[in-house]
Length: 176
Image (cartoon, rainbow, N blue to C red):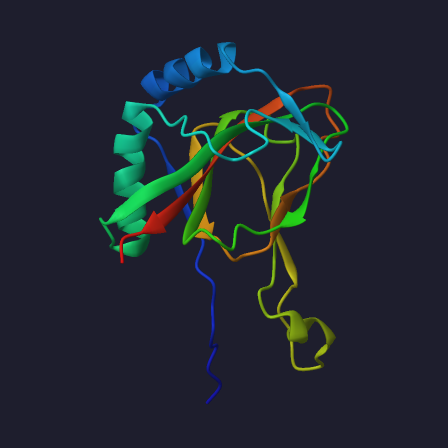
């Protein structure tokens, strides 16, 4: 018998109150002063101190977090908007201080920079036993929420389109 151990679960869901959420994020977007992050993309808060999630999205997010984790006891550490112009990308990084991280795709064509995840088992990248891919890509889709453990290395592939991609990222902590 072969057992697949230490899997990493990623959650994908779609918002049900899409029009309301899009309107709320449009209002937030109008007030943003963009900051250059690492010369690779723009974000709303380079200090990661903002909490920009509007009420209807937070209500919806509560359901998605429950579906993913079965946990109701959490709070928002930070949330920010990311803007990827043509040629922009995001380096592989993690949010190790967060229990849960996530992204909501506010504006995307679906071809303007895939989200990618890297294996959390770095030793497997040199192992003859590993038949699993070391990097998995997911296409952005407007209205979609993706949730994942904060420790998971991830990034955004280069936006090779003439379009601007806007997403909302967030970090959560569980009550202890």
